[in-house]
Amino acid sequence: MHHMDDNSAPRRQDRMPLFDLDRLSFRYPDGTLALRDVSLQIHQGDRIALVGRNGSGKTTLARHLNGLHPCQHGSLTYKGKAPRGELLRELRLNVGVLFQDPDDHLFCNSLYDDVAFGPMNQGLPEDIVDARVKRQIAAVGLDHLLYKPAHLLSHGQKKRAAFAAVTAMNPEVLILDEPTAGLDPLQEKIFKKLLADYQGTLIIIDHDLLFLYDLCDRAVVMADGCLHHDFAFRDLVSQPASLREHGLDFTFRFTCCGGHHEKAPHHHHHHQVATHAHDRSGHHLPVGAEETPLLELQHYSFRYPDGSPGLHDVNLVVRSGETIALVGENGAGKSTLAACLLGINRGDGYFLLHGNIVTGSRRKNLWQRIGMVFQNTADQLFCPSCWEEVAFGPRQMGIRGKELDERVAHALAQVNLQGFEGKVPLHMSGGERKRLAIASVLGMRPEMLILDEPTAGLDPQGEEILLQILADLRLTVLLVTHDLFFITRLTSRTLVMHRGEIIRDYSTGEFVTDQHLQAINELDYTYNNECCRRIQELQSR
Image (cartoon, rainbow, N blue to C red):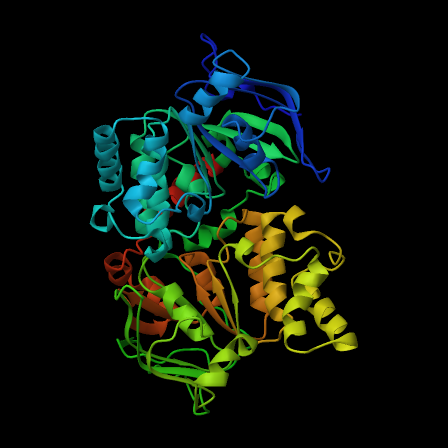
């Protein structure tokens, strides 16, 4: 175990720590050693960034702090005592955890019931529960959705709802696992304000060091299950060598700071560069493009079962070989549009594939032509081995024997997972699972690939690997993301959605320089750019 200068980390040695971990180790039932001799003190009021590569042990450590994992080896004390019996119950009530997937928190019939669930199980009187619920829902800006079911909320709204559900229990310690994954810039600002106002002990697991910059004063760095560094947060971001050592070097993103965006790359694809930007058109034609589009939507609309609008009068043309970014605030309709393109949602209007109207059997077979990688790999990976995972799709298409073996091998090679055939997906890191999910789609050899927030939850090293994989694909790609860096590096056309409509369709180069458009559609990256500049200044000293 390697510690940096202990004097550089904010410490409160004059009083008893809230948590005291001494040589804590933990092994999962499959034999994976997740924590190794971790010694750590956490004091009341600490604001800690818990960082490290995917698979370094951060989430496992967090699950010990709220009593979800038992103490196998070593010791863990809470307020000076081992958490057992009534003290363990107190710990679980006082330590709130916001999981990366908000659906893990939301399971009731309405947002009100989801937020009320915790306080009710604390045995609080009904009037106090009601007051807390309404206060916390208002604090996250969702009071207009008080009685709406969670499954009808956008991802960003679900994140805020889950935060309200956790904080309604008034926890003295708040642990957040990748809170910014999949959020638009406005939602990030809302979360940052909520966390800045939180008065308790704060522990944030995140790879987004820009988000953590003004929230945390201490950085605990995990590596291979060990506590490797424990020092002041600004000391971490000011040392490029330390960032690189632990897969946290995000400085490759500095090209996006201050509006100095790299020009969208010229890929091997043809027909990519837009000639003009069009308001609310969707009839965007790349230079020289005259062949039949890969797909087309004409005056396409969609309503959810409760009658609320999802898409309104969408017109869209996608041509083979294009690389397109689909952007917009959380709740703008991006995932709804993707579900329509996959045939999961069925709306009103015309949907054409290679000039043929998509109905009946054509809709049922869309999954063979258009592949999608979901934001949460748990929604996509379910087989016992990587080979089985990639083979599953082609098998449903009737492919067997030598061709099946070739497809699996080629798809795994495309995502740099050669030699992983026998590995269990659940035992792989987040970055490896993301690449496996891509391979499971590539094995079906689709004409078009849709990726929903592909960088969510990835460490910077995993992002760089993913960036190269996507840049090398010879496919039509639709990238649903808020990641401005990936947009500028991978796409040449950007569609902007707002309230279920495509309001702009133009070149990526025009999008990244249109500050007015970014601001009005809640896509203002000014704060992140400012943090980039401040970190660059620290690193240049």
